[in-house]
Picture (cartoon, each protein chain N blue to C red):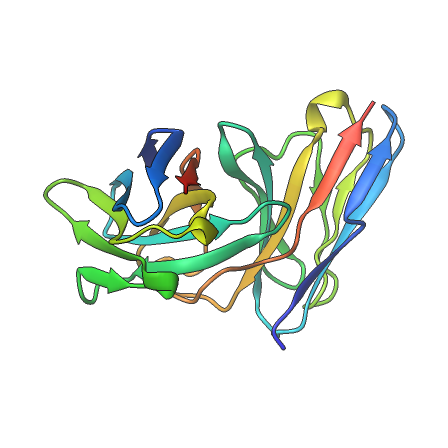
Length: 115
Length: 112
């Protein structure tokens, strides 16, 4: 069984400030972890993924995430927020070693960026 | 260009009127899934398919059917829609293993 918890359904930051979106997972096998972004009225776009290689993963648009097994966390960060980062972000887990691809998603975090 | 298409993008219907949402991918992927997105619940998998004629239930399959007669198509069927199926639906596909899932643009369904 696998699950994801995103801490904070809404996060608000000022432009230029650090973005930190929290994700904790539960998985009975080594996980693959993903962050997706959804802009208003659009589908989901992959930001980055962890698939058991480097624990610090860099993604698109300046985002990165660090896999911490001891904390069962995969928090998403960006050093300096931009207005265009305003969106909803989803963390997702997939059981490593399985091929069929079921993703279990967190409930989402809406990021608001203030000028 | 890798693409997942869904039709229709928006649909308003009434309780009990059968409907089909189509999904098509041009990536020759074996794996396809349907998800529904509801506020505060994230995305939940409805059904998935590992290949032609191979489908299985996800987390919330009640009230839905799927078929996979061709590799590229994976339609979602609501035989008798109910208001609790009002949601945003996404089709997704991937090539297996650690491959990225690609999502369609979504279908917003309202059942009155």
